[in-house]
Length: 164
Image 1: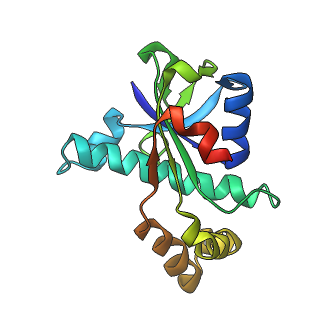
Image 2: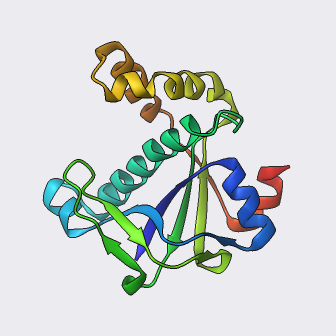
């Protein structure tokens, strides 16, 4: 199953250093039966995009908990054995899954990271995330606006250059 793991640049550095994402279990997003039901009109590409967008939003939450981390959302796309990715059926996040194993670099298909040009916008979204989740409409508008910025695609071979 293709899963999208929310991360930070620090997690990418650890992936590069150790060759794996750990510790398990890991939170991820995927095209689950609940996501298919929620997004009935979407084709497979649109469903994958929805799962990755949810992972990018979760990356914002990780950044909010890591004040020293560079303000760039990171999503790691990985191919995980189906038995290791269990849907959680959380109502507000229909693509939420729990990955029960460490994810070795060999399972990683691609890396997705914010363009450095949007650092200030991501930083503002991180600051406003709590207010947005509490229902502040102005904060919601700003945080939702960050989704307009596509994450850049990187092959796993580019990991050292991305971190350098």
